[in-house]
Length: 291
Image (tube, rainbow, N blue to C red):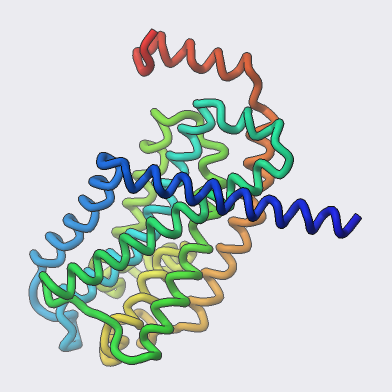
């Protein structure tokens, strides 16, 4: 029995990786999709180029803090905005309905989406850091320790937000409302998590609320990898708090995985041909789809 379970799990991983590779190739050929992600990088570079002066109390250019914060936000955005939109759209197209008849379909589907989002997020992060270094004298890790910190913070950050994004995508109503429902809170977190300006400039209660969510810790962890150690004096605790970064991101990763698979399975169980047809009729009547 245990051997059969392990075989099913292995098959799910293999199928998920194959599906993820196919979807990644399709994404790279989709100019419209790729231009959207490139636009995010351009916006981050423009905002960084606009700011001046140093981070208060340090000799670190504010441009470096902004680029480090946007690096964290782009990882966060891919998991919490792009992934839910993809999942909701594919549910509307009947993908989850087809997965009901596929053994191990939901785990394989989740593996594929995780692979797609991770490659997309890491590629966007690398592009931002290289372009920032070339065009805006942006920060890069100095030394093996900083590169190691960049690696584990990026990995834990994605583990924290990708499963959570999958869970959110499983419960959002439809693609037309998905963006509106997730964009406002996500932008709120961008402004309150110390990603684009020092978090110490915010009221203490706001800092406490931001500390509950992963973006604050992703940004802080990436700042520790990209900025000089002297910049830690601008942090709320006066240090990088890397153990707390690891703890909070790990907690969100566990929570996301505990929610994602059951919610996707529940969404798949609730799918039926009649529900799918009814949604398509409603979308056509509203003008969202051609009649």
